[in-house]
Length: 174
Image (cartoon, rainbow, N blue to C red; front, side, top):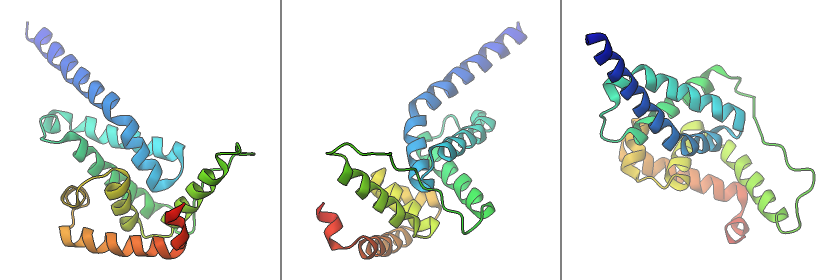
C-alpha cells in the first residue's frame, strides 16, 4: 500500500512539473534568447534551468511565484555560463538570404537592436530584457537579480541611455 501511495505522489508531482514546464518554457526560452541571441543556446539554458528546478521541485513547487523563480534560476544559469565562455565570443543570428519587401526594415532594426544590446554588460542586458521585453516591475527584476530597486532603476536608465547612443535618436522613430 505504501509503495502505491509513494508512486502516486511521485506521478502527481511529475505531472505538476510537466504542466509548469509546458506553460512557461516558451516565454523562458524567449528571455534566454534575448540575453544570448542564439536559439540553440537559449534552449540549452532553458533546459538547464528546468533541470535545476526539477532537482528541487519537492521543495519549491509551492512557492508563491514559480514563474519569477524560474527567471531567477535562468539568470543565474546565464551568468554562470557567461563567466565560463570567452569574453570575446559573440553569437549573432544569421540574417535571411533575402528579406521580403516589407520585412527588410524590421529585420535591420532587429539586428541593430540585438547588436546594441550585446554591447551592454550582462547585468544591464538582463535588466533591459526583464523590464522592457518581459514587462516586469522594477521590484520583480530586483528580486530576480538579487539587487536593490535603486540599482535596477539606475542601471536601467544608464543602459537605455547607452542603447539610445548606440542606435541614434532616429531609431526610436522607426
